[in-house]
Amino acid sequence: MKNFLKEFKEFAMKGNVLDLAIGVVIGGSFGAIVTSLVNDVIMPLVGIILGGIDIAGLSVKVGTAKLGYGAFLQAIINFIIIAFAIFVFIKLINSAVKKFKKQEEAEEVAPAIDPQLEMLREIRDLLAKDITTK
Image (cartoon, rainbow, N blue to C red):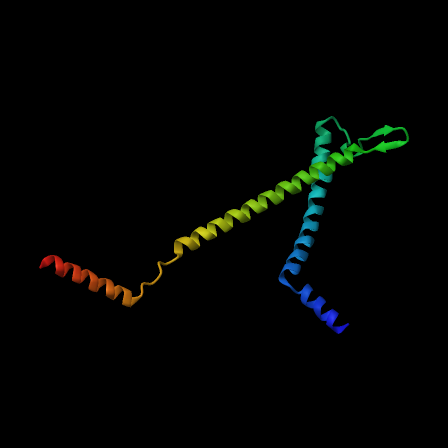
């Protein structure tokens, strides 16, 4: 049992698991914000524009069943906003990474030349010059 708990602790403390947990918590909070934005701001404005219609309450009765397509429309708008926000966030991260890589490549210094190799090149050049002057 001790070994099992030790393995679980090692697993839970890995960077990837913690990063994932943080992402899930932040994502859940962001989802709640977007849901409130859609339900409490956007959809009431759309309803006003459409003549005071309560979008969330739109439904069709089929027999004894009630199909609430208004709530479905809200969920679609909610999804589109979240997907767009994630898209923009990923685009920003990718452009920052590209910019950082370009800076690193620009800052890379040419590899240092071995002093012995440089000396041999100078000797070669002097010998070549000496041969052509004779």
